[in-house]
Length: 65
Image 1: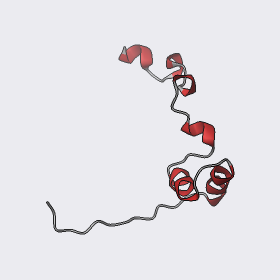
Image 2: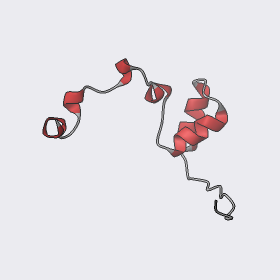
Image 3: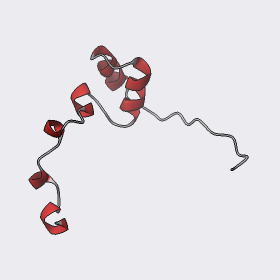
Image 4: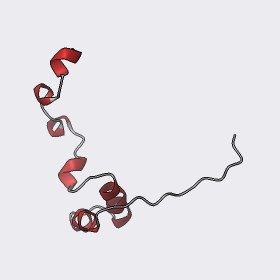
């Protein structure tokens, strides 16, 4: 193990996106984390199969297959 202490790095984030997420029921701390990662709305957090984009819309998917 390393003796180097862990660092906390604050990323810049959109306060507007963070506020919108919080208003949509996301915990304020998680809203800030998601906003820093580019998430702007609660539907962006949908992990169900219905929330996935159509594979045909993925760039180079046919080539990768």
